[in-house]
Length: 271
Image (tube, rainbow, N blue to C red; front, side):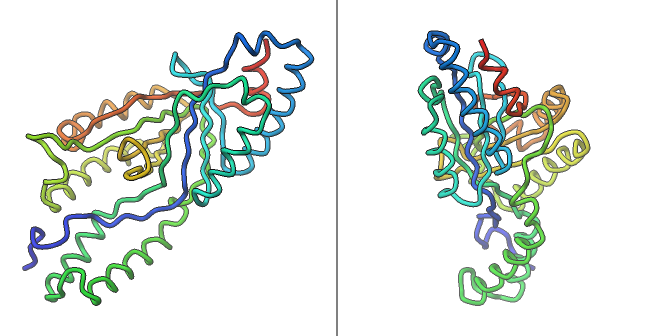
């Protein structure tokens, strides 16, 4: 019988699209100080650029609340493509009238707790030494097989839903409760329970998880997309009661926005 406590504790993951969130505030006083002809010229250039972004897995959202006026969300194949999008935006004349309040960098991530448990268990039962050539080959075969099966989820199109809710999160690493010291098998069971709640909302909300360990200040970013923003509250509230959230989750700031096309973008800045 295999023993999970004798195997590597790190679950396998799959990585896909590079993701950048940009939260922006309009410098309203400077923007209003321009004459109407200058504003129209700058806005026409920017709205045409937004049309191009929409065709390249980006979206613009009008933010609610004091944390900003605008959220730009970009999905790209790699970080180089994200940097190109970032530089292109900074080259717009409108950028002189925007202030970036924060940003978030991550990659779409799928955790493979179940597959990890199966492959690690199978290798342990065969007596194959962790991290040996045979072990690494079997793990890589599992990753490649899962990557092909999960490709649409790893490189998703931006959902067309009206609203987005984004928040970063960590797993607790305190003195009393530390996710990274919990045995693999226990974490696997908790994550299965956690995922089951999300699947019950599959028809009303689209969830995209992105990993940011080593890329940003939190460990994961969560994007929820829905036409009814109340679904965000219901889903997140229900998840608060499962063990992985109630005991081990830490949450950052929440951002909620309504999607805008190029015309909506013009409307936001028309004064």
